[in-house]
Image (cartoon, one colour):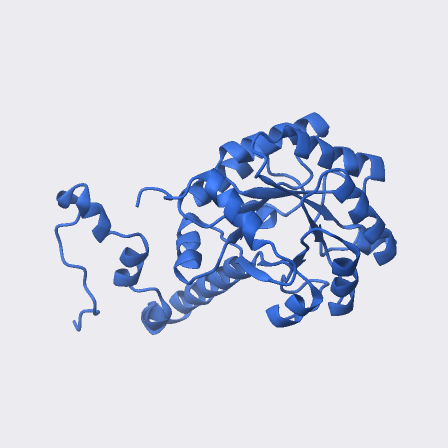
Length: 304
């Protein structure tokens, strides 16, 4: 009720058990603790916390402006709200290798099940934009080695992300992925692959689970879970899907208020009061204090 019932250690074991090549486990991106509750209720096995979403919620572009404190705090809020394992985007690790090790420990303390560290130069940019600059192989592997060495819970998942496909091509990116695995990565996130064939090549080349990023308006073709499972993908993330959907709906209702002077025509599209109270388990809190829930939830809109 007040927080998740499964411990961080249990959720880390859950994440590892889910990451089976070919399972293509769907991890929608949660942008709030409430959205995490919805993801869990709908039956998804886990959720993803996007660095781009954290930045965008703060009104910032995804160019490495967020801090470790902001990311860990948001991760903790979301992880607390769900029993699902949460994978969080830790960008470049927020500094040099020692900073990366501290990043791992901070997100461990926040209750996350795993994170990924990428190989862009800081300040970074969104993985589906042009003009990315990559660190050299030594720097990339040192980051992952520091992440693996820095964790205290061996079940915490260290995933390595590489953006090298966009700058150096797929063969070079695969070579880097192998080096990142040798450095200690438990799983690989190959960013901005072009099509299904490229996912097939990556999965065939690696002995660890592979993540597929199915983000809208990006460089990767949007593929079905069935297609990605057949390619050997272990996890599929939908990082910004819920935020884009929510902000699209918000924009439409604001425009309606300006145009019509009321939100009346949009009310049917909204989450009802009863449904919202159900998601936050309003009634459940009476088990602690009946005074917080001593009224009847309206199920229908008043007629006058």
